[in-house]
Image 1 (cartoon, rainbow, N blue to C red):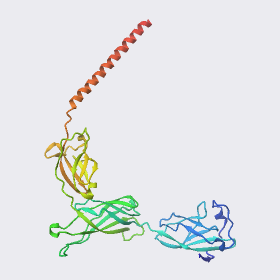
Image 2 (cartoon, rainbow, N blue to C red):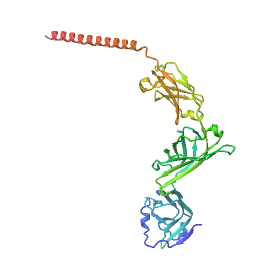
Image 3 (cartoon, rainbow, N blue to C red):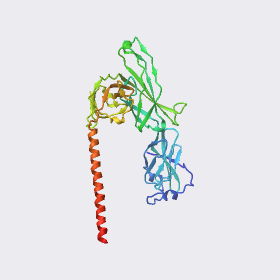
Length: 377
Protein backbone atom coordinates (compact mmCIF):
# COMPACT_ATOMS: atom_id res chain seq x y z
CA UNK A 1 0.00 0.00 0.00
CA UNK A 2 1.20 3.56 -0.66
CA UNK A 3 2.69 5.31 2.34
CA UNK A 4 0.90 8.42 3.57
CA UNK A 5 2.77 11.57 4.55
CA UNK A 6 0.84 14.68 5.53
CA UNK A 7 1.54 18.41 5.49
CA UNK A 8 4.32 18.36 2.88
CA UNK A 9 3.34 21.72 1.39
CA UNK A 10 1.85 24.84 2.95
CA UNK A 11 -1.75 25.90 2.42
CA UNK A 12 -0.99 28.66 -0.11
CA UNK A 13 -1.61 26.18 -2.90
CA UNK A 14 -4.60 27.20 -5.07
CA UNK A 15 -6.62 24.29 -6.37
CA UNK A 16 -8.08 26.15 -9.36
CA UNK A 17 -4.60 26.59 -10.85
CA UNK A 18 -4.48 22.89 -11.62
CA UNK A 19 -8.05 22.41 -12.78
CA UNK A 20 -8.01 25.27 -15.28
CA UNK A 21 -5.02 23.78 -17.10
CA UNK A 22 -6.54 20.36 -17.48
CA UNK A 23 -8.31 19.40 -20.67
CA UNK A 24 -10.39 16.95 -18.60
CA UNK A 25 -13.79 17.83 -17.07
CA UNK A 26 -13.56 19.86 -13.85
CA UNK A 27 -13.06 17.62 -10.84
CA UNK A 28 -13.58 19.10 -7.34
CA UNK A 29 -10.92 18.34 -4.71
CA UNK A 30 -11.32 15.08 -2.86
CA UNK A 31 -12.47 15.38 0.76
CA UNK A 32 -10.26 12.59 2.05
CA UNK A 33 -6.92 11.16 0.94
CA UNK A 34 -8.40 7.66 1.05
CA UNK A 35 -10.55 8.64 -1.95
CA UNK A 36 -7.38 9.13 -4.02
CA UNK A 37 -5.94 5.66 -3.59
CA UNK A 38 -4.77 3.92 -5.73
CA UNK A 39 -2.56 6.30 -7.75
CA UNK A 40 0.21 5.39 -10.18
CA UNK A 41 2.61 7.01 -12.65
CA UNK A 42 4.06 5.99 -15.98
CA UNK A 43 6.67 5.76 -17.31
CA UNK A 44 9.01 5.06 -14.41
CA UNK A 45 12.31 5.76 -16.18
CA UNK A 46 13.88 8.39 -18.41
CA UNK A 47 17.23 9.96 -19.37
CA UNK A 48 19.25 12.18 -17.04
CA UNK A 49 18.87 14.95 -19.62
CA UNK A 50 15.19 15.31 -18.61
CA UNK A 51 12.22 15.89 -20.90
CA UNK A 52 10.32 12.72 -19.98
CA UNK A 53 6.54 13.24 -19.65
CA UNK A 54 5.20 11.40 -16.60
CA UNK A 55 1.43 10.79 -16.43
CA UNK A 56 -0.30 10.44 -13.05
CA UNK A 57 -3.39 8.21 -12.96
CA UNK A 58 -5.97 8.07 -10.16
CA UNK A 59 -9.20 9.62 -8.87
CA UNK A 60 -7.67 12.84 -7.47
CA UNK A 61 -6.08 15.73 -9.31
CA UNK A 62 -2.36 16.02 -8.45
CA UNK A 63 -0.97 19.33 -7.26
CA UNK A 64 2.67 18.47 -7.85
CA UNK A 65 4.97 15.52 -8.33
CA UNK A 66 8.15 14.91 -6.36
CA UNK A 67 10.98 12.80 -7.74
CA UNK A 68 13.38 12.48 -4.85
CA UNK A 69 14.21 16.05 -3.81
CA UNK A 70 12.95 17.59 -7.06
CA UNK A 71 9.42 19.04 -7.21
CA UNK A 72 7.66 19.16 -10.58
CA UNK A 73 4.63 21.28 -11.50
CA UNK A 74 2.56 20.51 -14.54
CA UNK A 75 2.91 22.95 -17.42
CA UNK A 76 0.87 20.75 -19.78
CA UNK A 77 -2.70 21.17 -21.01
CA UNK A 78 -3.38 18.01 -19.06
CA UNK A 79 -2.58 18.71 -15.39
CA UNK A 80 -1.91 15.00 -14.87
CA UNK A 81 1.28 15.23 -16.99
CA UNK A 82 4.63 16.37 -15.56
CA UNK A 83 7.94 16.84 -17.41
CA UNK A 84 11.16 15.73 -15.73
CA UNK A 85 14.10 18.09 -15.26
CA UNK A 86 17.73 17.32 -16.02
CA UNK A 87 19.75 15.76 -13.19
CA UNK A 88 23.50 15.42 -12.75
CA UNK A 89 23.77 11.71 -12.09
CA UNK A 90 21.78 8.61 -13.00
CA UNK A 91 19.97 6.71 -10.25
CA UNK A 92 16.63 5.68 -8.75
CA UNK A 93 14.52 8.03 -6.59
CA UNK A 94 11.17 7.67 -4.76
CA UNK A 95 7.98 9.14 -6.26
CA UNK A 96 5.64 11.29 -4.17
CA UNK A 97 2.33 12.77 -5.40
CA UNK A 98 1.09 15.89 -3.59
CA UNK A 99 -2.73 16.03 -3.44
CA UNK A 100 -4.72 19.23 -2.62
CA UNK A 101 -7.82 18.23 -0.63
CA UNK A 102 -10.80 20.40 0.36
CA UNK A 103 -9.37 21.30 3.75
CA UNK A 104 -5.80 20.07 3.63
CA UNK A 105 -2.86 19.01 1.48
CA UNK A 106 -1.52 15.47 1.59
CA UNK A 107 1.31 13.59 -0.05
CA UNK A 108 1.23 9.99 -1.19
CA UNK A 109 4.58 8.23 -1.57
CA UNK A 110 4.15 5.45 -4.10
CA UNK A 111 5.59 1.96 -4.11
CA UNK A 112 6.96 2.92 -7.52
CA UNK A 113 10.35 4.54 -8.10
CA UNK A 114 11.66 6.62 -10.99
CA UNK A 115 15.01 5.72 -12.56
CA UNK A 116 17.15 8.34 -14.26
CA UNK A 117 19.11 6.47 -16.90
CA UNK A 118 22.57 7.65 -17.88
CA UNK A 119 23.40 8.28 -21.53
CA UNK A 120 26.83 6.72 -21.14
CA UNK A 121 27.94 4.95 -24.33
CA UNK A 122 28.21 1.19 -23.94
CA UNK A 123 29.88 -1.32 -26.29
CA UNK A 124 28.38 -4.82 -26.46
CA UNK A 125 30.09 -6.54 -29.38
CA UNK A 126 32.28 -6.12 -32.44
CA UNK A 127 32.56 -8.02 -35.70
CA UNK A 128 34.20 -9.49 -37.65
CA UNK A 129 36.31 -11.50 -35.23
CA UNK A 130 39.15 -11.44 -37.78
CA UNK A 131 41.83 -8.83 -38.47
CA UNK A 132 44.36 -8.59 -41.27
CA UNK A 133 48.04 -8.22 -40.41
CA UNK A 134 48.34 -5.08 -42.55
CA UNK A 135 45.44 -3.38 -40.74
CA UNK A 136 42.66 -1.30 -42.22
CA UNK A 137 40.03 -3.88 -41.24
CA UNK A 138 36.62 -2.23 -41.01
CA UNK A 139 35.05 -3.20 -37.68
CA UNK A 140 31.36 -2.86 -36.90
CA UNK A 141 30.85 -1.91 -33.25
CA UNK A 142 27.45 -2.60 -31.64
CA UNK A 143 26.21 -0.98 -28.45
CA UNK A 144 24.09 1.92 -27.23
CA UNK A 145 24.14 5.71 -26.82
CA UNK A 146 26.68 6.38 -29.59
CA UNK A 147 26.76 10.04 -30.61
CA UNK A 148 28.90 11.61 -33.35
CA UNK A 149 29.41 14.68 -31.13
CA UNK A 150 31.33 12.52 -28.64
CA UNK A 151 34.13 12.01 -31.22
CA UNK A 152 34.51 8.27 -30.56
CA UNK A 153 37.93 6.70 -30.95
CA UNK A 154 39.10 3.10 -30.81
CA UNK A 155 42.05 2.38 -28.54
CA UNK A 156 43.37 -1.09 -29.45
CA UNK A 157 45.66 -3.04 -27.12
CA UNK A 158 47.26 -6.31 -28.17
CA UNK A 159 47.81 -8.44 -25.10
CA UNK A 160 51.09 -10.28 -24.55
CA UNK A 161 51.42 -13.28 -26.87
CA UNK A 162 53.01 -16.52 -25.66
CA UNK A 163 54.02 -19.62 -27.58
CA UNK A 164 51.87 -22.66 -26.96
CA UNK A 165 54.64 -24.26 -24.88
CA UNK A 166 55.05 -21.04 -22.86
CA UNK A 167 58.76 -20.62 -23.60
CA UNK A 168 58.53 -17.24 -25.36
CA UNK A 169 56.47 -14.10 -24.82
CA UNK A 170 55.85 -11.19 -27.18
CA UNK A 171 55.19 -8.05 -25.13
CA UNK A 172 51.87 -6.22 -25.00
CA UNK A 173 51.41 -3.61 -27.75
CA UNK A 174 49.32 -0.46 -27.28
CA UNK A 175 48.28 1.06 -30.61
CA UNK A 176 47.47 4.77 -31.03
CA UNK A 177 43.76 5.71 -31.02
CA UNK A 178 41.97 5.70 -34.37
CA UNK A 179 38.74 7.65 -35.13
CA UNK A 180 35.38 5.91 -35.52
CA UNK A 181 32.27 6.89 -37.51
CA UNK A 182 28.84 6.74 -35.86
CA UNK A 183 26.16 5.25 -38.15
CA UNK A 184 23.37 5.34 -35.55
CA UNK A 185 23.01 5.28 -31.77
CA UNK A 186 23.54 1.52 -31.69
CA UNK A 187 26.24 1.14 -34.37
CA UNK A 188 29.54 2.65 -35.45
CA UNK A 189 32.51 1.62 -37.60
CA UNK A 190 36.25 1.79 -36.87
CA UNK A 191 39.37 0.76 -38.81
CA UNK A 192 42.25 -1.15 -37.29
CA UNK A 193 45.90 -0.03 -37.49
CA UNK A 194 48.68 -2.17 -38.97
CA UNK A 195 49.45 -4.90 -36.45
CA UNK A 196 52.80 -5.64 -34.83
CA UNK A 197 53.04 -9.41 -34.51
CA UNK A 198 55.84 -11.87 -33.75
CA UNK A 199 57.32 -13.89 -36.58
CA UNK A 200 55.48 -17.14 -37.14
CA UNK A 201 58.83 -18.73 -37.99
CA UNK A 202 60.16 -17.79 -34.55
CA UNK A 203 56.97 -18.21 -32.51
CA UNK A 204 55.17 -20.86 -34.51
CA UNK A 205 51.44 -21.09 -33.79
CA UNK A 206 49.90 -18.61 -31.33
CA UNK A 207 46.63 -16.90 -30.46
CA UNK A 208 46.21 -13.14 -30.10
CA UNK A 209 43.87 -11.49 -27.62
CA UNK A 210 42.87 -7.85 -28.07
CA UNK A 211 41.32 -5.30 -25.78
CA UNK A 212 39.19 -2.84 -27.70
CA UNK A 213 38.83 0.38 -25.75
CA UNK A 214 36.42 3.02 -27.07
CA UNK A 215 36.87 6.60 -25.92
CA UNK A 216 33.98 9.08 -25.90
CA UNK A 217 34.43 12.69 -24.86
CA UNK A 218 32.10 15.50 -23.82
CA UNK A 219 30.28 13.82 -20.93
CA UNK A 220 29.63 15.49 -17.60
CA UNK A 221 29.64 12.19 -15.75
CA UNK A 222 33.26 11.69 -16.80
CA UNK A 223 35.33 8.77 -15.62
CA UNK A 224 38.67 10.56 -15.86
CA UNK A 225 40.19 14.00 -15.47
CA UNK A 226 39.98 14.75 -19.20
CA UNK A 227 36.20 14.39 -19.32
CA UNK A 228 36.25 11.13 -21.27
CA UNK A 229 34.27 7.93 -20.86
CA UNK A 230 35.83 4.65 -21.92
CA UNK A 231 33.94 1.46 -22.75
CA UNK A 232 36.03 -1.68 -23.20
CA UNK A 233 35.57 -5.17 -24.57
CA UNK A 234 38.18 -7.94 -24.72
CA UNK A 235 37.93 -10.43 -27.58
CA UNK A 236 40.07 -13.27 -28.89
CA UNK A 237 40.67 -12.41 -32.53
CA UNK A 238 41.95 -14.44 -35.45
CA UNK A 239 44.71 -12.57 -37.29
CA UNK A 240 44.94 -13.59 -40.93
CA UNK A 241 47.41 -12.96 -43.71
CA UNK A 242 45.45 -12.54 -46.95
CA UNK A 243 46.51 -15.02 -49.63
CA UNK A 244 48.51 -13.78 -52.58
CA UNK A 245 46.53 -13.53 -55.82
CA UNK A 246 48.12 -15.09 -58.88
CA UNK A 247 48.83 -12.88 -61.87
CA UNK A 248 45.93 -12.66 -64.27
CA UNK A 249 45.91 -12.18 -68.04
CA UNK A 250 42.87 -10.87 -69.89
CA UNK A 251 42.28 -10.31 -73.61
CA UNK A 252 41.96 -6.65 -74.71
CA UNK A 253 38.80 -5.33 -73.09
CA UNK A 254 35.97 -4.22 -75.37
CA UNK A 255 34.17 -1.53 -73.36
CA UNK A 256 31.23 -1.48 -75.81
CA UNK A 257 30.18 -5.04 -74.85
CA UNK A 258 30.14 -4.35 -71.09
CA UNK A 259 31.10 -7.93 -70.24
CA UNK A 260 32.55 -8.39 -66.72
CA UNK A 261 36.04 -9.78 -66.17
CA UNK A 262 36.94 -12.11 -63.30
CA UNK A 263 39.68 -12.40 -60.68
CA UNK A 264 40.37 -15.64 -58.82
CA UNK A 265 40.59 -14.74 -55.10
CA UNK A 266 40.25 -16.63 -51.79
CA UNK A 267 40.10 -14.03 -49.01
CA UNK A 268 37.40 -15.58 -46.82
CA UNK A 269 35.48 -12.98 -44.82
CA UNK A 270 37.46 -10.18 -46.48
CA UNK A 271 36.14 -11.20 -49.91
CA UNK A 272 33.18 -8.86 -49.39
CA UNK A 273 35.52 -5.95 -48.52
CA UNK A 274 37.73 -6.34 -51.58
CA UNK A 275 37.96 -3.40 -53.99
CA UNK A 276 39.19 -3.68 -57.60
CA UNK A 277 40.96 -0.72 -59.21
CA UNK A 278 42.00 -0.41 -62.84
CA UNK A 279 44.43 2.38 -63.59
CA UNK A 280 43.83 3.73 -60.10
CA UNK A 281 40.04 4.02 -60.66
CA UNK A 282 37.61 1.88 -58.69
CA UNK A 283 35.73 -0.69 -60.76
CA UNK A 284 32.15 -1.80 -60.38
CA UNK A 285 32.04 -5.30 -58.85
CA UNK A 286 29.03 -7.09 -60.31
CA UNK A 287 29.26 -10.33 -58.30
CA UNK A 288 31.18 -11.66 -55.28
CA UNK A 289 31.64 -15.43 -55.11
CA UNK A 290 33.62 -17.49 -52.60
CA UNK A 291 36.44 -17.99 -55.09
CA UNK A 292 36.23 -15.08 -57.52
CA UNK A 293 35.17 -11.49 -58.16
CA UNK A 294 33.46 -10.29 -61.34
CA UNK A 295 34.07 -6.65 -62.22
CA UNK A 296 33.45 -4.08 -64.95
CA UNK A 297 36.51 -1.92 -65.71
CA UNK A 298 35.90 1.84 -66.00
CA UNK A 299 36.01 3.61 -69.36
CA UNK A 300 39.57 4.06 -70.55
CA UNK A 301 39.11 7.84 -70.77
CA UNK A 302 38.69 7.92 -66.96
CA UNK A 303 42.01 6.26 -66.19
CA UNK A 304 44.97 8.15 -64.85
CA UNK A 305 47.68 8.86 -67.44
CA UNK A 306 50.40 7.53 -65.12
CA UNK A 307 48.66 4.17 -64.66
CA UNK A 308 50.84 2.37 -67.19
CA UNK A 309 51.76 -1.24 -66.56
CA UNK A 310 55.07 -2.99 -67.34
CA UNK A 311 56.49 0.03 -69.13
CA UNK A 312 53.52 0.13 -71.49
CA UNK A 313 51.29 3.18 -71.70
CA UNK A 314 48.61 1.07 -73.40
CA UNK A 315 48.24 -1.37 -70.47
CA UNK A 316 46.80 -0.38 -67.11
CA UNK A 317 47.55 -1.83 -63.69
CA UNK A 318 44.80 -3.91 -62.02
CA UNK A 319 44.90 -4.00 -58.20
CA UNK A 320 42.82 -5.66 -55.48
CA UNK A 321 42.69 -4.12 -51.99
CA UNK A 322 41.06 -4.80 -48.62
CA UNK A 323 41.92 -2.55 -45.72
CA UNK A 324 45.62 -1.74 -45.97
CA UNK A 325 46.35 -4.83 -48.07
CA UNK A 326 46.91 -4.01 -51.74
CA UNK A 327 48.00 -6.47 -54.44
CA UNK A 328 48.65 -5.94 -58.14
CA UNK A 329 47.09 -8.84 -60.01
CA UNK A 330 47.73 -8.05 -63.67
CA UNK A 331 47.64 -5.58 -66.54
CA UNK A 332 44.67 -4.72 -68.73
CA UNK A 333 44.59 -3.28 -72.23
CA UNK A 334 41.53 -1.92 -73.99
CA UNK A 335 40.39 -3.06 -77.42
CA UNK A 336 41.10 -0.25 -79.93
CA UNK A 337 37.95 1.18 -81.50
CA UNK A 338 38.37 -0.16 -85.07
CA UNK A 339 34.94 1.11 -86.09
CA UNK A 340 35.84 4.75 -85.52
CA UNK A 341 36.71 5.63 -89.19
CA UNK A 342 33.48 4.03 -90.42
CA UNK A 343 31.42 5.89 -87.82
CA UNK A 344 33.09 9.15 -88.79
CA UNK A 345 32.26 8.54 -92.47
CA UNK A 346 28.63 7.84 -91.56
CA UNK A 347 28.45 10.99 -89.44
CA UNK A 348 29.81 13.15 -92.27
CA UNK A 349 27.44 11.49 -94.77
CA UNK A 350 24.41 12.16 -92.58
CA UNK A 351 25.49 15.76 -92.05
CA UNK A 352 25.87 16.20 -95.81
CA UNK A 353 22.38 14.86 -96.50
CA UNK A 354 20.88 17.16 -93.86
CA UNK A 355 22.68 20.15 -95.35
CA UNK A 356 21.38 19.37 -98.87
CA UNK A 357 17.80 19.04 -97.59
CA UNK A 358 18.02 22.37 -95.75
CA UNK A 359 19.41 24.21 -98.81
CA UNK A 360 16.75 22.67 -101.09
CA UNK A 361 14.00 23.76 -98.69
CA UNK A 362 15.26 27.34 -98.65
CA UNK A 363 15.39 27.50 -102.47
CA UNK A 364 11.88 26.04 -102.81
CA UNK A 365 10.53 28.54 -100.28
CA UNK A 366 12.16 31.42 -102.19
CA UNK A 367 10.66 30.30 -105.54
CA UNK A 368 7.16 29.95 -104.08
CA UNK A 369 7.31 33.39 -102.49
CA UNK A 370 8.52 34.96 -105.73
CA UNK A 371 5.58 33.48 -107.67
CA UNK A 372 3.12 34.73 -105.09
CA UNK A 373 4.53 38.22 -105.41
CA UNK A 374 4.13 38.15 -109.23
CA UNK A 375 0.54 36.95 -108.98
CA UNK A 376 -0.21 39.76 -106.56
CA UNK A 377 1.03 42.38 -109.05
